[in-house]
Structures are given as structure tokens and as C-alpha cells.
Amino acid sequence: MNDANRDREQLLFRSLMEASLDPIIIHDIEGEIIYVNKAFTIVFGWTKDEISGLAINFGPDDVQPATQNGISTALTGEIVSTFQARRLTKDGRIIDVDISWTPFYDHREKKDGLIVILRDISEKKSAEKAFRESEAKQRTVLDAFPDPVVLYDMSGNVIYINPAFVRVFKWTLEDIIGRRMNFVPEEEWPKTLKKIEFLKRGEGFYGFETRRFDREGLILDVCISAAVWRDIAGTPQGSVIVLRDVTEQKKMEAQLQSAKKMEAIGTLAGGIAHDFNNILGSIFGYTQLALDDAKSGKASPEFLEEVFSSAKRARDLVQQILVLSRQSRLEKKPIEVSLIIKEAAKLIRATLPSNIIIEQEISVMNSNILGD
Image (tube, rainbow, N blue to C red):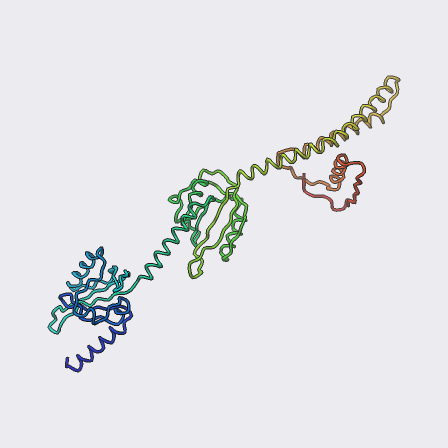
């Protein structure tokens, strides 16, 4: 290579070094600095004149062994491209850097020194630290959350459950992580699938009442709220599901409903007692008349018919009370609702003061329904 080409090559090499956004240092074989680029002076604060010819040590004490190991590796002819360390600036700040080392050679192929490229990764490290801290805070919140929480990926596989989920549903994360968890009773699937469609469209939902199995097969009443969780770019990554166990609440509601029914029975008791007294009075009266006729040798079927009619009224009244208060499931069958309304109006009439008028306008057409 002639001198002109060598000079051109050196000029190109120096131009590339000066244009680099990463700090670059060149050491001779003794470790003294023979060159730093502009990026080095900007990042670390030393000028070329201040450090030229010096073997400066700008690493904190705790990273010296790793630094010396990196230098030794570079002097054997190897490039270290993944070495991370910390370095001091002129004003005493410590920054995180990625370091690449490589030896360079003279015209006789003799090792002449090291080229060191440093990339400032302090902001990246700070961002990673902030992200880890944020993630830790979020995990702490989820771990402390009183209701069961499940995180699913986009394929519906479990990636996290909180301690409340373990407490309520008995599964541990090791039992179900990375796979689907089928704890939906068969009869709950149709409406559950509709809610899953919300999540696929990127929408959440709130207050979905349904039922779920626990690990032991016990069915729990739950109220579910859900949302799609996204990455920093807004791309959906999965869903977060919050399940509130409302089993005891449902039991209390059922008990309260039963108590209200019994309270209603108590409210009706006064009016019903009045109806029963009327019915019994009718039965006693017509029975006495029938007995008197029987003693005199007369036959009076109309008195017995009135007794029979009153007895049926008493039976119907008792049946209405039983329907109102019973705990068993209703038995549905075709009935004529207009007749039921009329009977209900009679029952209501017995509970209201006489100065309140009940007006009825009941159509008998198409009044058949399926009911109890």
C-alpha cells in the first residue's frame, strides 16, 4: 500500500471515529491513551489534551476486576462485545456502559494497542429499573387484592393468579400456569362465551353474575369484571379477570327473600283470618240448618251445597298461602291467568280497608300462560 492510500485510509478511519455517537478510546500497548473521539469528550467531560498520554482509570473500584479481565481478553486478540460496566465521568457521575474491546496492529502485524468503544446505556438501565419497580408495585397490588384475579394471555392460557384466587378456588399457579383452566359449569358456557367475545373485540365488562367450579368441584356464585391488558404500544396482550365470590351473599339474599315472604304472610294474616271467620260462620250456619231439617225429617240439599262451597273456598285460601310461602321450585303448567288474577284480587281485598276500591278489567282472551 503506497503512502497516499495509507493516508487516505487513516483519514477515513479518523473521520468515522469522530462521526461516531459512541465514545471511543484508543490505548497503546502500555495502556496510555493516544486518542479519544468527540463523543468521549461530550459524555465523559475530559478533553483530548487533558487525558492524552495518560493511563487514566475511570472505573469505580468495584468493577476493576471485571475491567482487567476484559482488557486481558482483548489483548489475546478476542473482541468482547457484550461486556457491561460502570464508568466515572470527570464530574464524578457514574454511568452504565456497554463496552467492546479489540486489539489493533502495526504494519508488522504486531499488536500495538486496544480500541475501546463505549455505549452509554444509563437511560436504558434507568428505564429498565423503573419498569421493574413499576412491575413490582403492580404485582404487590394484585397480591394484596382481596378478590381473586387471573391474567390470561391472548390464547386463553393462565399466566398469573393472585393469592386470593388460590384461597377461594384452591388451585395454585403451578397447577394451571401456561394452560387453559376449565372451571366453567356446562350450563354457564353460553353466556360466558358471549362475554369472551367482548374481550376479543378489545372491550371489558363489569358485574357479570355466573357460577364457577373450585378445584374440589364445589360450585361458587361469582360476579366477574374483566378488561383487556395491553403493552406500551397499545397492542392487546391478554385479559385480566376479577372474580368476586358472592356465594354467601346469594344465600343471604335467598334467606332474606324467604323472610320477606313470611313477613307478607304475617301482613295477610289479619285479612285471611277475617275470610276464614266468614267461611267458618257460613259452614256452621248452613250445617245447623241442615241438621235442623234432618231432625224434622226434611231434606235440604241447598244447605249442604252451601257448606260444600264454603269448604272449597277455605281449601283454595289455604292453597294460596302455601304457594306464597313454600321453598320448593315452582311446577309450571298451562293455566288461565285471568282466573288467577281474580283469585288474587279476592285475597288482596281481604287485606285492604273497606274504603279502598279495587277495579278490575280482565280480558279472558289469550290469557293462557305457562306458570304455577
